[in-house]
Length: 156
Image (tube, rainbow, N blue to C red; front, side, top):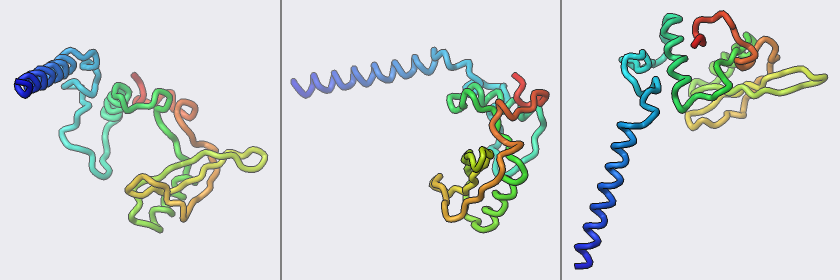
C-alpha cells in the first residue's frame, strides 16, 4: 500500500512538472524574441563554418537577433581592432596552429598610454601565456565608443 501511494505521488509530481514545462514553452513571454521565432532570418539554413561573405542586410539581421538573445551583452555591440592588434594575432596564429581564438586585454603603459595585451586561446578557452604581444590601443576598442554611427549593421 505504501509503495502504491509513493508511486502515485511520483506520477502526480512528474505530471505537474511536465505540465508546467509545456505551459512555459507555449505561453512564455519570451516567445516573441527573435531567437525563438520563425521567418526572422535568425536561424540560418546552414551553420557558418569557417568564413563566409554576407550582405549588410544579413549582418543587420544577425545583429538584431543577437540583441534579442539571452547571450548578448547590453553594452557591447562590436569591438574594433587596429592593424597592430591584427598583426599580433597573425603572429600568434603563425606560431601555433592549434589555437582556437584570441583575447585582447586593455591596459595602460607609461604616462598613460593605452595598450592592449593580445594572447591566443586554446580549445579549453584558456589563455596561452607563453607568447603575449603588446600593442597600441589607439584607434581600437569597444562599441559604443569606437562605433560607425552610419553603419547599416547595428541599426535597429
